[in-house]
Every structure is written in C-alpha cells, then in structure tokens.
Length: 495
Image (tube, rainbow, N blue to C red; front, side, top):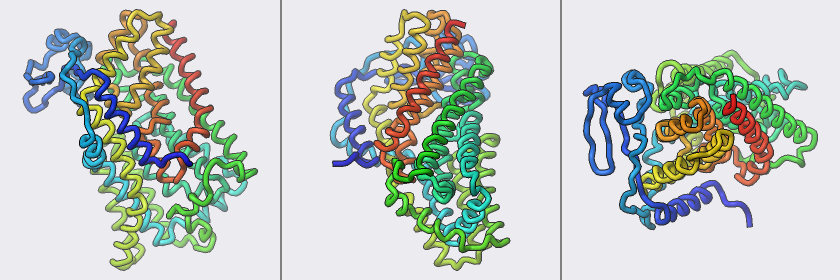
C-alpha cells in the first residue's frame, strides 16, 4: 500500500465532485459582462440573455457598487455574479459518461497552458543537449560553495515578489527544470527546490500587494480602490515570506547535514531527466558560446515576465517566446536538424505526465460547472456568515474562502465570482470592504498551497515528490501562516 499518484488523486476527486452534483441542489446567479463591441452590458440568466445600457444607473439598479469605468477600461473583463439573483435550477447530475469525459474536456480547455509546458520541456531538452546547463551548474556550484543558503533566500524572495506584484504562478512551471538541478548540486533535496519555487509563488500571491489578477480585480469587483489596505498587505507579506524562508532554511540545513532526514525519494530524483547529468557539470567548460546560450535562455524568462506584467501577454505569447528561444539556441549551438528535433521531442515528452495532471485538474472544474453546483456552493457559503460578530465573521470567511478554493482555484475567477456577492456583507458587519478582499486573498492563496485542484500536483509531478510527503513537509508551516492570517484579519476588522 502506498499513497496514490497525482493522476489517481485527481480522478478520485473528480468522482467525488460528480457525486456532489447528485447531492447539492443546482442553481446559479445571473451574470453581468461588458460588451466592448456594442458598448452595452449583457445580462446572462439561466435560460436567456439580454442587453442593458452600460451606465452607472444600470449598475446601481442591479445593486452592483462598482464604478462604470472598471468595466469599460477592461479592468473587469470576466462576467460577474449579480447579487440577489441566485435561483435554484433543475438538477443536472453528472453521470459515468460525464465523469469519464471530464479529463478530455479539461485537456482541451487547458490546451494553452499544456502547450506552454510542452514547449518549455522542448527548450530544456535542447539546453541539455548543448551542455550549457551542466557548464552553468558547475560554475554556480563553485561560486556558491559554502553559501548555498543564499540560493534559497534569493529564489524564494524573488519569486514571491513576482507573485505579489503580477501574479507569478503558472509561469513557475518553467523554473523547475532549471533550478532543481542547482539545488541538488548544492547539496539539498528536491523538496527544498520545490518549496523555494512553489511556496515562493504561493505566498506571494497569498499576500498580493498590487497583483492585477488578485488585489486589483477583487478590489474593483468589491467597489473600492485597490490602494485600500495596501499598508496592511505589505506588512503581512513581509511577515509571511520571512516565516516561509526561515522554515525552508531549517529543513534545508537538516537535510544538508543528514541526507537521511530528507522527505524525498533519492531514486526518484535521479530519474529526473534534467538531474541525471548534474554530476557531469564540473567536466564541461563554460565557453563563450555556452554563456551566450545561457543568456538567450535567461532572456526568454525576462521577456516572459515583462510581457505578462506590462504588455498584457498570456499563454500564446509566452509559448512563442520559448519556441523562438529554442530555435535560436539550436542555430547558435550548430545542432543538426535530426538532433534538434530528437532533443526537443524528448524534452517535451519528459513533461507529458505533468500536462495530464493539468488537464485532469481542469476537468474537475468543468464537472462542477456542468453540474450547476459552483454558484450553489457560493450561495450557501455567503448565507452562512449572515449576522455574525465582525471578528468571527472575517475569520469564518477566511476559512470559507479556503473551502471555495478547492472548487475555484483561480484567483481572478474567485474574485469576479464571489466579490459582488460577499463584499456587501461587510457593510452589515460594519467593517471595511478591504477586509473582505484581504480575507479572500489570504484564504485563496493559502489553500492553493495544498489544493489538489490547483498547481501543486503539477509542480510535484515535475520533481517526482508524492503528495503525502509534501503535506508532511508543509502542514506545520500551513498552520503557522493560517494563525498569522487570522490574527491579521481580526486586528483589521476591529481597527
């Protein structure tokens, strides 16, 4: 007996979600979206749709306290739920066929991120074939000798800053094949590398400061300025990322002093394609050509980050950057056509299992939406908090958002679906709506660090760490961060 693999876990969860569609009443909220082509609002009901003038008066009539310019400027670009419009619908339970077809639908719907992962795998295969990674790791291991802990601090801090400022999350899947061999060469296990990358991103998003996909879109949907509560978010970010780095450093030091205390499987680590040749790193000289190849590879990430944070790029543009980078590296290394294609396909094949995990996770969301239970869960969650004391209310909401994250892992999706419904509850509880935004961010971000429907299983698949081992590593930190979040929200609600 052993803990199930990631794919099995997701299939089990999909089966349970399909069962929930038989038990939870179906229902939905009416939704509102802005149509730029007609400059009108479109209202979608359970069985029809109609247009209304795009005006502030229309928003007030629907009890939506959001400035009109948030829609017309594109700040709110997804349909939002209209408060007070929830209605039960005829049940639409998902049967065996729907359960079995959900993974296929998920793979099709997640094709954009799946192709990004495959192309990244391809460029990693090309990099391995050139020897640039090995030469670079050999050089870096000499530079960091005796100061390996700096790798943990800088990696976790920089990635968390990306998560906090522009929502760096899915993009981190590209970092594992590059950074994990460096952590292994530095004497750490893959759990240290995973924690620095994945938790850096997760804690950054959890404590978002100016993240447009969390803070800004949630504040807009709540009808407040995104600067409201910024000082508190900065404070909780500093506290949470400091705790996380110290926690990783303690584990890393224990593993470096005694590898037997590692939670990872050393044999599984050695089967990773991008770790296999790490031992040869010191035998390859870092020539001018290899330095140039590494520069191009690094530039791909810089361009990707700039594109996402400043130019409105998403998966197609990011994938194109890495595909172009792979071709340039092939030319510079004078790689033969057959060798290039073989290395590219082998690298992409190494990450094929991860793409199935991504598709399976997306299939669970499809099951919920097709079964019409997503809005029902939101409705009952909002009803639960009605009439509570402000301190109790905000902490219950913190845990409700953790539960909702299992069903809606997307930070932007969570914001536009829940904020119009839950933010007005702040008025009756006599607290600021920025407190609701903070409860959403902390709950959604914290649970996404463990949620099997989020990025965690895909990340674990990249480093071949089992989910149960990861939970054993994370749960003490999870409890500490949850306590920090509760204290922070309680203080805010009474200030």
